[in-house]
Length: 163
Image 1 (tube, rainbow, N blue to C red):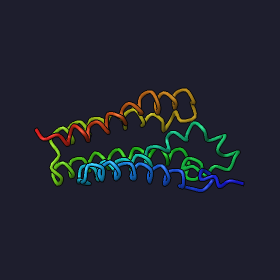
Image 2 (cartoon, helix red, strand yellow):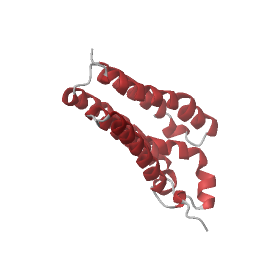
Image 3 (tube, one colour):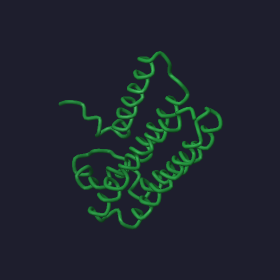
Image 4 (cartoon, rainbow, N blue to C red):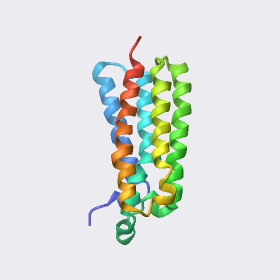
């Protein structure tokens, strides 16, 4: 029988995070330098994978439970999963202010980053009382949250441009 990483707690997140970090490091090495900006992007990616990505697993809890898949919502509960995502948004907002100052990003990073992260938290917060509603969860996570994730990555790029 093949090894199913999804059945081992946190291995799914670890595998995804490691893949993203390897991709970022490969890009940096291809151009000959791994900068602080790229390192920050890797940290954001890992934070999103461990802190926010488990929101995706809310809609699959019944199936995951039946098949023995150990996701964060199954092991720690859906409310914890949502609170973890909200805490991740706050932590990343604070880190954007610190990183802006320490790593020399331009002013776009803290302004756009904090705006996007607080908007994402605003979209996610109602899940605390609506996570059982499949349609609502789908809309909050995919139609509203996913575009904000892409904008957040773009913000790191924009924040890296020397103005």
